[in-house]
Image 1 (cartoon, rainbow, N blue to C red):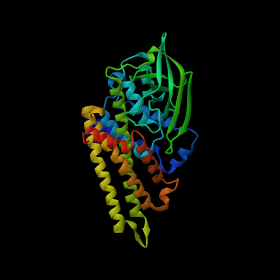
Image 2: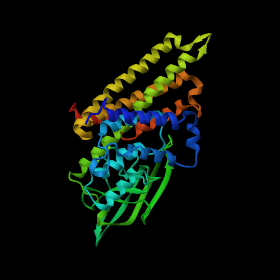
Image 3: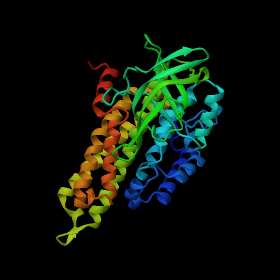
Amino acid sequence: MILTGSAERDALIESAHRLIADRYDSTGYADRLRAAETFDQQKWADIAELGWLATAVSEENGGLDLGYSLLSDLTQALAPGLLLEPFLSQVGLGVPLLDLALPERQKDTVLGRLLSGQEIVAFAHHETRTGEYFNEAVGSTFVHQDESFILNGCKAVVVDGAIADQLIISCIAPGTSDVNLFLLPASSTGISTTRYRSFDGRNVADIEFTGVKVPLSARLQYSVPMTEVINEVLGLYALLIASESFGIMQTLLKLTHRYLNEREQFGTKIGNFQALQHRLADMLLATVRTESLLTLARHQCAELGPSGAAAMISALKYQTGIAGAYIAQESIQMHGAIGMTDEFIVGHFLKRLTANDFMAGNADEHLSKFIEQRGMY
């Protein structure tokens, strides 16, 4: 479903712009990073009340069913706020995994609590820090014992793992390669969590689980093969990460343009210097090229789903990784020394763009994936 220009899209994006303008003052971002709380609980409650967590969730599961394309639009609109609240990871990973699962009482109850902002879920899937995003082998295991499953293994750099109330853990049966997903409380006996923050302030964790006993109902069931489900969700998360990166690129372009028109040197606005005009024009061109790929990725995702749009999402993710770094570095250079101060937002935008390149598959992996999808070797 493509809702570009629709009343639903306009209302949703306007609500995002309004929240960022009213509640996310860029001058206080460094203070929010230094705060003891991992994120603002009141802001999270407001986000849930606005219905954003349910944007792309099916109507039968209590969602708005507005589609992944509009969810990408919303992510882009929220980008200037550099949200520490786990919106992107919730709507891009945990929530769609539960939305796509077959009906079951425990799953339905947890999903309802997620959409209302009462709980956080983390998808614990990757097991190494250097493995591939899409094709990493799962080594964590489960065994069937009486009326339960017993889980053993470890997961690395789990986004939201430090703040999660619920976990979705991928495991295989010993001697097989078929992945299963299990939904369980993060406080379950046998789970050990090492919590920390990424360099841009997001909450992550390494998770070990030894002899964790869960009921048979904890295993999520799907109507399609599990590999398709996981690749669908991983592709969606890559699209949303790229959408946020593009929103940051747009914001940096505006900030830099405004600064060049305000800053004076040698008795004139530095925006009058031709060399800086050319550099700003190059930043604009990089942003326009990225926007074209984002538009194509959204349209393909709306029509074919994230798996069907895999090649275009990879092209977009590669472009935001390369162009994002370029635009952030140019913005800092043209702002001068102030661009690297902790109290000025431009440096924090650079950190988020750098972190986004590492997340959901880096530029190199997505370039290889694009070439493979297109059959270019």
